[in-house]
Image (cartoon, rainbow, N blue to C red; front, side, top):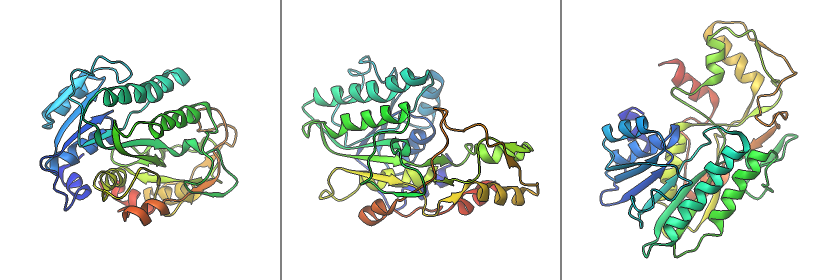
Length: 311
């Protein structure tokens, strides 16, 4: 994440004297860590990847521990009682069991670590997923909708959410669950990559809405939660841009920008891991905009992809 991009995510924030621990320093977590450094925080992290650990240390993180989140090996290596904790864990593969290990066992380990300390975490933010929602058929989805997962992986993520919801106030003063839409941004733009490679046919169909959110807007949402007024209690928020668009529309627009013919869709395969058709729905982020004043810098796919195309 470039320094200028970090600065935009935390403009006006001064986190001097605050301690942030980041679990899962992947695509989003690394950006959060870098932005927090820009804002003056003491940043510590846990990663299972030794090479990633070296890169994080080189970026200026104050402490980096290499361990599996689901284990207890790291519990004595990170001091509890952080002002802020962000869990950006993602699956490292391994199918359903890999999901359970990363999300459920990982959350159990975090809560065990916080609960055995006399000093509770101030604010904990967990980046979850809109995959917990089973709804389709063009429904508008806000946080009041049932969320038990339409796939085994979605159900596992929901299980990890419930663990946090049941956590003790003595371990964590407040928490925020951010259900993220489809993530894209610098160095992560699969659809654009396919078109640049000249794909004549894409899998699935083009007649469902893509719900997207640019990475830097996720980072902004995380910090909006971390520094929310003390009166703001634990909440669940959807995080998505404000203009879901049909996949076919997005593909046609990108193809035009690249000067290529728009590819077709094979209609026979799916780009959903559980082998199910992608649901057509519109994820609403009105609650976080209303409650925390979060506003995406990239409110639709055009704004986000224009930035990527200009690089």
